[in-house]
Image (cartoon, rainbow, N blue to C red; front, side, top):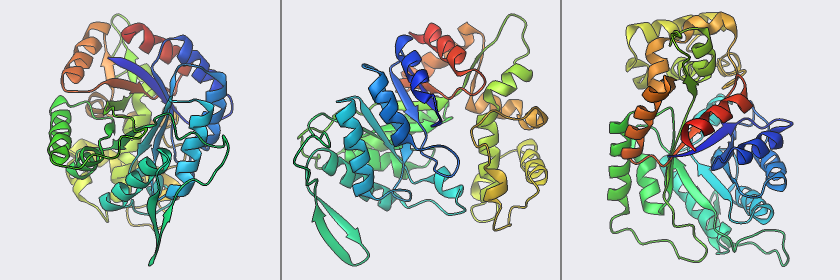
Length: 359
């Protein structure tokens, strides 16, 4: 299986990209969460100039964050800096919108956005709508401002629901998912994508990247001999994923209770403790300002008790080298093409461990 890395935009991010390329990793992604992290287009511009081989990904943008013309301009500009190396992840904005206290966009909005980006980034015109006003738009640049000749790879962010996977099938894109390490769930996503693709007219071939790869974002902790799999080191390496899930459950408990209701008693108690610890409630209108600071950042030692073993095992890869290779092989057999880790404790070391494990 291929290997890659996901990081937050910050000064010095290009140095991590260079190191990832030196280690032989396949891709380097930057989050698009405006009120929590820096800007991914700025960060990947630096990475594009500093590297020559590694693929560079936005993970992920959304029509709830950026208009299609603005996002397409950013992508095609990156493609001018790193021709044929750009990957664009698109999603409903489930996280980035909730950090604003807003709900994500719809699957229909996601599909319209994806269509527009695919068209514009391939040099085609597309339909653009603002309210009741609809116009055909296209790039009007006469020079080398943007690159629409080299293909850009698109992937749709999907969790357990079928709607996003169906968008991927209809648009001929790949999939990316966060913390989804269940092979059965991946089989279901791929079945949905294949079913949606059947009988769907294909997008024009002009400069469209035809790959439809699947990516999973997780974290990795390789255990030393006799190391506690749920000790402090393992919790620090995986806690950002666990707390992201608990924050999401806490944030959506009142208006979208179905997710929290799927959790067990221990997990629901952890959600309650997180709300108390952050000084907010599940119904407070400003709860997003308390739940999402340092989102996907290294956890504080006092929050280690919230990193439950059950959630660590669900969202992250923790185990001996042989254990991890066995789990990764099962994911590969389920159709996952690339394992992306999100390192927070010591990114250079964690990237090196990933490379040693998989490349």
